[in-house]
Length: 131
Image (cartoon, rainbow, N blue to C red; front, side, top):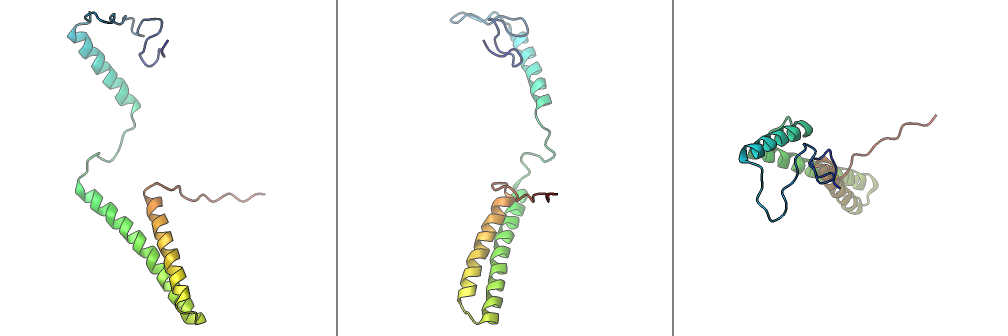
């Protein structure tokens, strides 16, 4: 038995009262009835689908903007790591080890920021303080 709410079979009868055609025989439902069912199904599906405010195919401009955003987040992570490593090396005289370590950390931070902006990695949640 299938679910009644989805329009499937329940005790061999569709929820609208129609019986399915027997296998191997021609359908007794005329084309107008099929069109009416299809239209009703499309209305039910459109009521259940979420409404997107953005168009599905907005063109290549959206892709360029997304690529620019991802690229700038990646480069920013590397530049921040580069700057921190250089400052650490100048201050402590540990050249080039601080620069190497912080450029690698900047690279990792840039990749993580790109993945977060694409929704592939969840945002970090701050836990509320305990009483």
